[in-house]
Amino acid sequence: MATDFTVVDNAGEPWTLSDHLDAAAVITFHRGDF
Amino acid sequence: MAQQHEEFLARGARVYGLSADSAPMNTAIVEKLALPFPVLSDPDRTQAVTPLGFADEKDPRQISRPGTLIIDPNGDIVFSVTGRDYADRPNEDDLLGALEGLGLPAATQSPPELGESRPSERAMPYEGLPHYFRGAKFAVLAVRGRYRDTGAEFADDTKRYVQMVERYLEALPAVEERRT
Image (cartoon, rainbow over all chains, first blue to last red; front, side, top):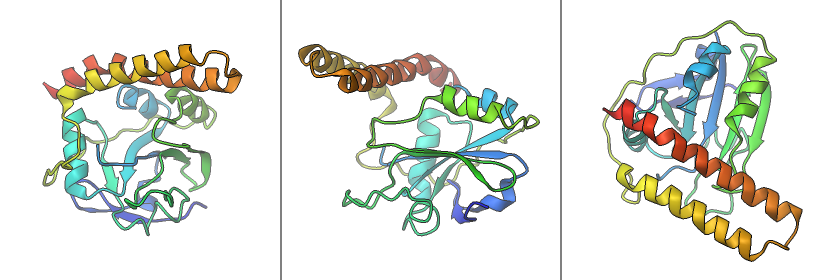
């Protein structure tokens, strides 16, 4: 099992991985500041 | 990534960006590129960036390294790539190929909600992107030609970089269309 985590989406709302696993999740990590 | 969004959905995957930038900075990038998926924010890197191994410990700005995870519906990481630097990103076709093997039903993904938008002071305006990509491409081509005898690894690396930038350039008309 992947580490579950909660972050915020770009609207500032909490986003928890396990709430979204009714499908696969492709997560791309970015350096940001672009 | 945005260009192939429908292909990811067809293979049963939703797409998310994630960075250590603030939510308003990420809304600005969603708006700038008219992304069809949200960009998540882990500003202190304690929730996802560091636990999942993407913290860039060498960079003083406390940022994430580039990389990609595919997490299947069981919560298992079935694909993981960490880039060596900002110019090292996986090819979307490799991700789609990994998803193909999972045999998942198609998924849907709502357009991202937009919150407050506040671009980074250093963010490049959208209008600068075509020039930036072309400049990057030709700079690498020049260096590639100058050091053509360096070896296969250098040749492969620079070839992959040029191909990546060409994909970004090819994606710009679709970005333009989504923005209008």
